[in-house]
Image 1 (cartoon, rainbow, N blue to C red):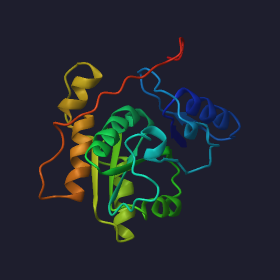
Image 2 (spheres, rainbow, N blue to C red; image 1 turned 45 degrees about the vertical axis):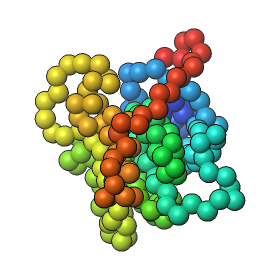
Image 3 (cartoon, rainbow, N blue to C red; image 1 turned 30 degrees about the horizontal axis):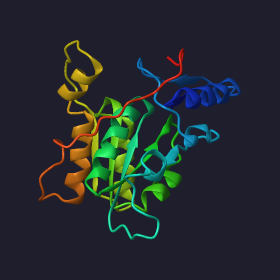
Image 4 (cartoon, helix red, strand yellow; image 1 turned 90 degrees about the vertical axis):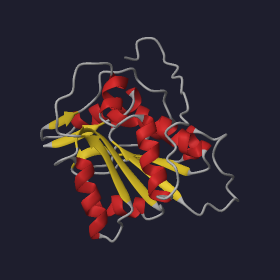
Length: 215
């Protein structure tokens, strides 16, 4: 079974087209929420087991460091498509604190090109893995173990704890689970500066502009 987790309408269309061409079962996980604003990277061709690396210069050019400015520490926020909106806000929050943060959309939950994933993370000081599923036995826990096998230990996993959640809005449930954008930004900041105060109080609001019928 192949499992994909697209992040946007364009990404979903590409993943669906790819899935139709397969001769084996393929499942697509897509959240019940508004489609985020499109980025050029969402239109990258689908490659089995590989995701999409989105540089902060693409989603927050005005907040990103200049190309000729050395960046001593960078964090990579890895996520399933369903958590992209929260991760995007977290990345912008980190950039406001002068922490360079890129995003890697998994696109695939199964299979995973482990060698490619490890090569992507090699350029970063810390990696935070975020998924809209349970932590125990989830893809992010698996990927964290992959990184540890390759000697990369400065990681954190943000996923849902194995307990009952009361009904509520998406925002309320994410906050209850410690999965809000502020929580994700805090986790990244603590990996880079574990002795400093977390950045959760400094959140950036993002407004998504969508075309009619994009849901």
